Length: 227
Image (cartoon, rainbow, N blue to C red; front, side, top):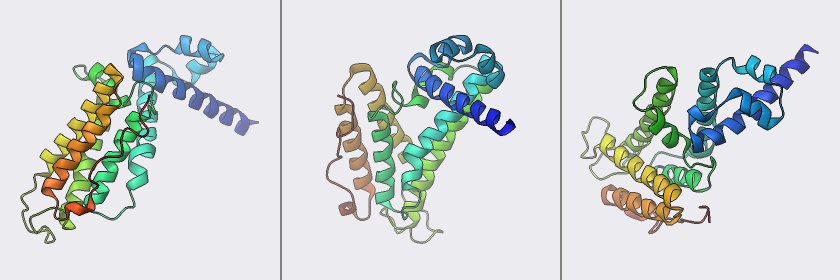
């Protein structure tokens, strides 16, 4: 009986978070209301309050759940690929596809909530900031692994060699292009933004690649972008 109650509680939690992730990607984390969500989903208000306790707890749980979705959609599919320039591009493809398919109805969840909490303080701000910093570090790591594997010009096979590639700068530029595509597509309902971003990223990677032929000529977008 105890196991049954736990499983029902876990299922209710998953149901609520699926709903709150979608709401937050459009209306922001401040748009979440425990009472309204319980009513919308036909759930017991007392049960939902027992699971989350406060609005801030619900916001934090929503950010963490969205992070798990992001990892499943973007990071995990390429994690086991060999280091190199192709892996860098496949990671970018996954991000553009994740945004374009509207895994979250408001586009990239973290782009949406970052604008809401960037100038605030507190646990929710810190959770969002940590998620974004971890993503940036991961992009930098994939780029650096490609550099050390000889994917970029400069003879970086030797880890002691200080290659010409500025990994942090390139990561910044790649993320900026992806996020601009997300913002433009959401605001203007223009799926071609993903193709433009993909072309920009490929151009930047090809200019620095040791073997540009390992990269496609053009991105395959907007194949999965919303109509």
